[in-house]
Image 1 (cartoon, rainbow, N blue to C red):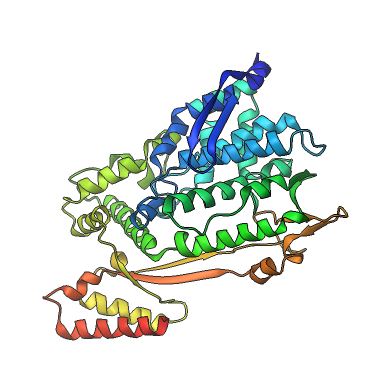
Image 2: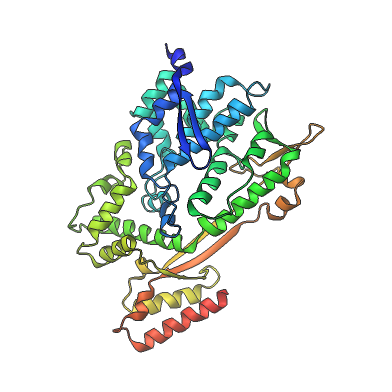
Amino acid sequence: MLVEYAKRKLAEEKVFKDPVHRYVHVRDQVIWDLIGTKEFQRLRRIRQLGTTYLVFHGAEHSRFNHSLGVYEVVRRIVDDVFHGRSDWNDDERLLVLCAALLHDLGHGPFSHAFENVFKTDHEYFTRQILLGETEVNTVLKRVSEDFPEKVAQVIEKTYENQLVVSLISSQIDADRMDYLQRDAYYTGVSYGHFDMERILRVMRPRKGKVVIKSSGMHAVEDYIMSRYQMYLQVYFHPVSRSAEVLLNNILKRTKHLYEQGYQFTVEPVHFKSFFENNITVEDYLELDEYLLITYFKLWMKEKDPILQDLSTRFVTRKLFEYINLNPEEEMERFEKLKNLFQQAGIETEYYIYHDCTSDLPYDYYEPDEETNRMPIFLEMPNGEIRELSKESYIVDAIAGRMKKDHKVYYPKEVLMDSTLDPYLKVEIEKLLNETKEAGT
């Protein structure tokens, strides 16, 4: 009976209309049942791009439709490209489809800011949801008792067949191929588009890894440059990061007040286990972005002036201003700015914030180093396997080069305060202008 469930097909194929892939096709009963679980449906209430909707107003898409997209890309690979090839085992088809669908299951609301404050790890909670007393676990166990563990291993990149892992987690995986196109579509930018059809056509399964036929190298170069541009123009956007700073500080202030025994007007009951570091899967799954926004709206009337102000800023989009400043290189200037704001009566712990983002456009293996993701391999006409940057001048030019961006955020309204000491106002403006000029 368990084996039959793994192979069971729907009486009629189900399709989801999708703006990126046109349609997402579901024929497997297991996949259809997983989509219907409450844990997967929760992803409708978690935005894919966190606070980016406050910059690109179309970026309201969720981790639900991204997860369906990753599943669809993998389905096309294993059903249309890999099927029948000697290095691909069709017995692992359902496993990789489930892992693709569920890979983001453990993300919390506004993922990164939430994780920073409460020291949670979405990969850890993905595993707990897969293996805990959840509807998802019940569905997976109907395939076999050890199936939930196998799915978890694929997502954690510990599964023995790294070919399966690489379809979801490598430098040219289904996850990236979906989110680049999906995020570009919903933000309205042109940077994230590349020829995915061509890349899929030239992908081949080989022992332990996916390779790309050398004839498809230029499509892969385009994909890597698309990713590079998306990080610079969308994912690292300074205004989106300003909103994330506010979000981070709201949660940090709430946690501080709770630890001090502050009497909230609206008690943060859903955060209690997070404050006390005894989080259950049930507590974690209760949280989504709808709930957080509700709390922020209620905290706009909170007695604590800092929590009230930060919540109001986030809900009404009164974001912090920013300057290009790296405290690691200009500590004296950074400390002077903080001192001036302190003299102006500003709580610098919540109103002066240094943020640094970084990314590697493309990474590659060195013989004595370990990297988190597999590099991209080309299969040459003679059958030789070559790492991409050894053949592509374009990729070689950016391979291993870390891109960092430093910003310091502050409330620009302080300069409009009529009660501010004129001397302090002049000194703050002078320092800010000097820093802006130095950063141009």
